[in-house]
Length: 199
Image 1 (cartoon, rainbow, N blue to C red):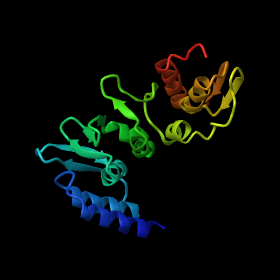
Image 2: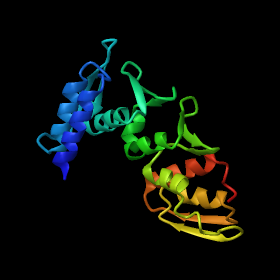
Image 3: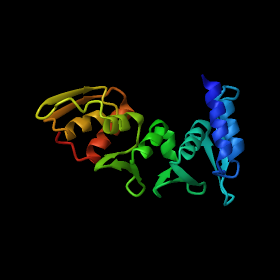
Image 4: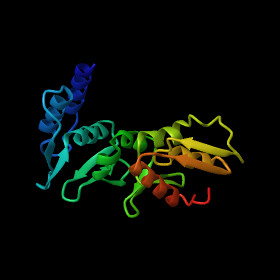
């Protein structure tokens, strides 16, 4: 049920020091959005250096949640950058793309390479981070599947997460099928990032 979660969220917000100048009012606005009392819209964040930036309410919820679970510790409105607890930087635009996966990615020690603009961990690279990537590589639901020397067909390849996983686990060749043009394009970029074009 949404109401108890919103109340829990509100209590956590009150216990933390503000992340930005209008932290409390935006947290309240986000809570009203979650209760479906207002529609999703862009809002303005006011940082402590008096700079401002516009951001979507859904994204502000993800940012505040990441702050509450000690994954980020500051925000730079002027440059649109979040600083994580371990000191790495994440463009806030990444929350527009993969907000569902960023919190779990940070919790599992994925890092955003600000220079080359990709997420990485243990030599694996992805243009953007999503929940399924973290699930495949950190929870390893396919860990017991022996693909060494075999041909794998990955139907619904998304951005190449499981395809890259199988290639790293020794598959001789992986055929990934993805009907969504955007996901398909990103899959090709991720395959290239990981130098797996020959697999």
